[in-house]
Amino acid sequence: THSRIHSFIIRPSVILHPSNKMCPKPVKNSAEQRDGRGRESATPKSTEELLARFPTSNHRRLHFLSESMYRPITIIAALLHYTTEPLGIEPEVSMFINGAFFVMLIFPSAVGYWALQLLEMYAFGPGFTSMMIRYVAIPWFVLYVIVIIIFDKTHLEPTDANPRRPQTEFQAAAYKFFSRCLDYFPTTLVPWSEDAQLPTDEGQQYIIAMHPHGIHCMPQGMLGGLSTLFSDRFPGLMDSKLSGLAATVIFKIPLVREMFLHMGYVDASRSIASKCLKEGRSLFVCTGGEEESMYTEVGRDIVVLKKRKGFVRLALSYGADLVPMFGVGNSDFYKTYSFMS
Image 1: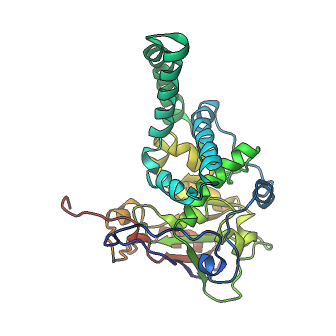
Image 2: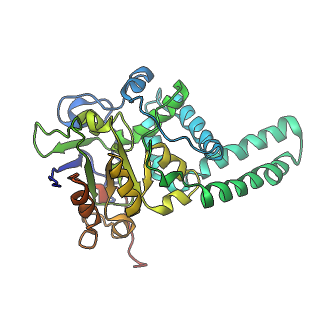
């Protein structure tokens, strides 16, 4: 077998430095500033356009406890889309929510608590909130932890590990809200050549290796769904079997787990990656992982690579093409502190 190497970079047109007194305003539907190629924003303008961009491929069915965990955030995101999009502040709000990704469980929990408080005040009387928390919320969460976090193996199954297509207009609105965070920092996609292609018509597979991780690997967001610059530039690859690899700990965090599963991610272990490649899937992974994330420093791009050659061996073993991808400015999104290092 043989492997080839392609490369491209993702370059933010606006980089947020901690020395800036104010955050830069997002560029809305600006063709030149969005991708530098005269195209309009990759974010679709209508629900019909969004649904048309998604392939009709199968996706994994999640346990009903996982679905019930994810449904509240879908409702909240859709409502935020309907309220913030007319005000022109959707990219800012979306970036704020996505920036707090690993504490996202706070948002539906807070909304649920406020809803119970309103019901207690205007309908059921004192004690309703504490009763619902004690006899409904806590038992349900304990059941979720036991059944899903401990025993569920969905993240270990590469079959149909595709991004989930929105089925309703409400789900499409939620998807559009989350995808608008990519418009907060207008981004340029720079392939290795003007006529660059990643064809899949002959069963060619790819391993896309991203650097650096940063606090959040923002370029990876372009690969976890459609309606992005990457899916616009390489539609054949995005419409085929493409899965992301994520650390095992990601699938142990409530709600974060469900979001990654909806985007088509699987566990980043070597055995699962091999299963994906055996099924003819392509992969994308931030090879430096958590270690590279801990080295994030504004103004420096630190890459952990010397000890991370497993993705190269996988590519050679299965004849997959390597596609290095570098996110210029990804380390500058957040100010970091080294006093504990």
